[in-house]
Every structure is written in structure tokens, then in C-alpha cells.
Amino acid sequence: MADGAPRHGTQVRDRAATPDAAEARLLARLTAHPVLRELESTPQAEFMRMLLQRRFLSLMFTAMYDIAIDALTDPTTIKLVREILREEYPDPSGDTPSHREDLIADLVALGATRAQILACRPTAVTASVMAETLALMCDAAADMSDVKVLTILRLWGEIIVSVEYGEYWKRMDTQFAGAGARSRFYVGHLHHDGREPLATASDSSDTHSGRLGACLKRLLDGDGALEQFLDVEEQVLALRLRFYDQFVRNRP
Image 1 (cartoon, helix red, strand yellow):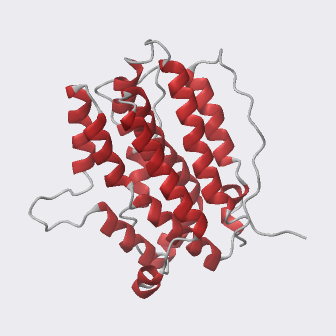
Image 2: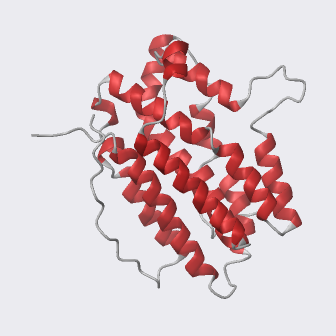
């Protein structure tokens, strides 16, 4: 796979669309990306290269949530974000592996060696996407905008993850079965990060996106809030598409 980054055409946004409809169209652009669309036919070495690079985005999760906690102003929302962050480290005794350790276990079950994982370094594109993602969150925090911060957490940290892993799972399911292994990381995140539309999101939702969405939709009636939501979602998606652009295979 080549590191070239094809340009995405400018998207015309329908400002009259509901937030959920606009978001659904964004996610359709993600699943239509050729890398995700063609995963099942991608050579194993190239698939693993992508997964190893994707691990670096996962490593950003705790930093992004910690910055969000510092920036948010609503006590109920802060408590929820703390709870989600603490789930990454399920056992205060240290006896239970963290989610990041579960990711390593899954990569090994899929055929990577620990030496291969530890020797991997972010590509220039991955490093750029990481830096710009961190900058996006820092800018949202500096603006003291709960809408922007929550939009990033919900889309970047939860919904997009579930969509990606849903596409991965079409291939991984048989790989884990063939290895006689059970996924400790990917399948769990596929489910508990799943998208719940803002229209039905509630504080009692079973998913992270549903509970974050309940906090977010209480803010969307504010002046300029919907514009902030739409703009930030576009930026989050653009960064994730750019990450996958680097894995598009050259064709004659």
C-alpha cells in the first residue's frame, strides 16, 4: 500500500438537515472509503500494517479524555467522562489488563509478534493525523466549548471507533476463529461504542455514545451550537479519512 493521500472532494453540507441525518451521511463516507470497503481482500501483511498504525490513534484515547475533563463545565458530564475513562483501566488492583493491553493481545492473536508491534513507529501521515487530532481537542478546550468537546469525544472516541471495528470484524471474525482465540478488544469496542442517534440518546443508554449524546443534545439549542457540532464533526471525519488514505493501494 502506498502512502499517497488522495484528495477528498469538497462536501456540500445541508444546514437544514437534522444533526443525526448529517452525521449518518458523514459515517457513510467513512464506510465508503476504499480501504475499509476492500478490507476482506487486502493482503494480510497490509491489513496488519494498517492495524499497527491504527493502534497509535487508540493510544491517544486517554489523553483526549483527560483534556476533555479539564475543559468541560457541567458536573454531570464531567462525571460521565470520568467513568468512561476509568473503564480503560478496569481494576484498581492492577490484576486486570487495561484496554490497551487487550489491544496488544488481539494483535498477537491476529498474527503480529510483540517485537513487530513494539518496533512499529507512526508514519508521517499517522503522526500528522495524531497531532492535528490533539490540536482539535486543545482548540475546543481553549474555546471552553462543551459542545465542541463533547462532539469530539462522542464521534472521535466512540462512534467512529465502532464503525471502523464493525468493518474490521467482517474479516477478523474468521481470523480469530481460525486461531482458536477470542477477541478481548475489538469486538467489545464494536458494541459498547456503537452509535446511538441524538434523537434517542439518554442518560440511561447502554452505549457511551448514547450517554454522551444525552449530554450533548441538551446543549444543541444554544446560539451557534448546531454550527459548532456540524463543523467539528466534519473536521473529525476528515482526519480519519486522511488516516486511511495512506493505505490506498496504487492501481494501474
